[in-house]
Image 1 (cartoon, rainbow, N blue to C red):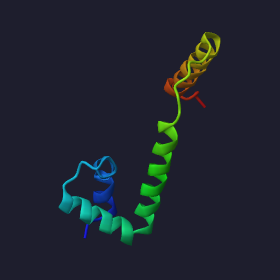
Image 2: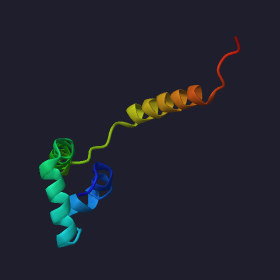
Image 3: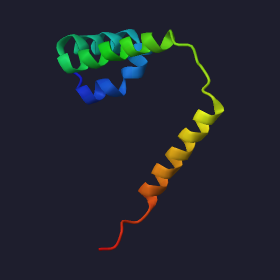
Image 4: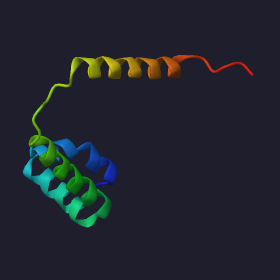
Length: 85
């Protein structure tokens, strides 16, 4: 029996169905018996299904610029040393 950690290491290949038949059967057996991994697989499959149906949209340039400035400010604040006591 594989562990959850081993299963998660194979999750992408399992979902992409690029694992061999023996490995696939072992991973499927784990998902069937492990409620935590079942939830991860189920949620990931649903998420992928939603995002496959989404079309890419561009945001207005001013919104993009404001977002980038906000992110730069946040990153600069994290990188700054803490204030002296």
